[in-house]
Image 1: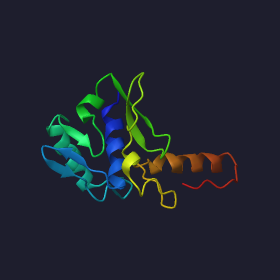
Image 2 (image 1 turned 180 degrees about the vertical axis):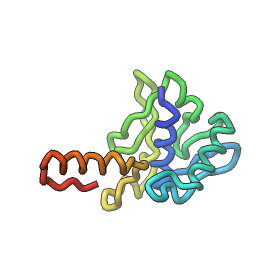
Image 3 (image 1 turned 90 degrees about the vertical axis):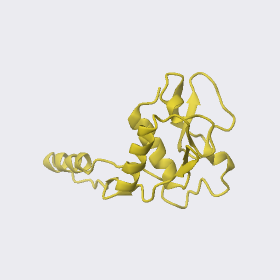
Image 4 (image 1 turned 135 degrees about the vertical axis):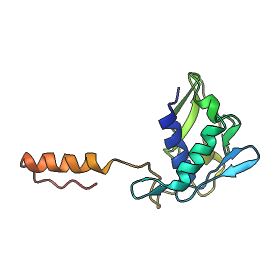
Length: 142
């Protein structure tokens, strides 16, 4: 079963490569997804709109599972073996075209930076501070 946070991350990553959510005959694909190390206001507005719909009849373009179903115990989010992006899979079963990358001629493109979710800069900075305090002189790039 996917958590709300996992579904939010799933959408954020796919929005970054141009895949949209189809809900109530409307397509959502907010841009930008990230701003200043966190989700952008555009993404937050989209997320709230989808939550208000109860995730019912909300599908990632190129998939057949609704976000509502994804939040049920019968589904999980895992990485696609082809492109490493998150994909929804039924627990204990295999789908042949579970990943939207299966019909995308331009994805994966490993020459471009991979989509990502906001990371806590504080945690990275704290690791650096801890290592400095411990006398470790290795470089730690965030």
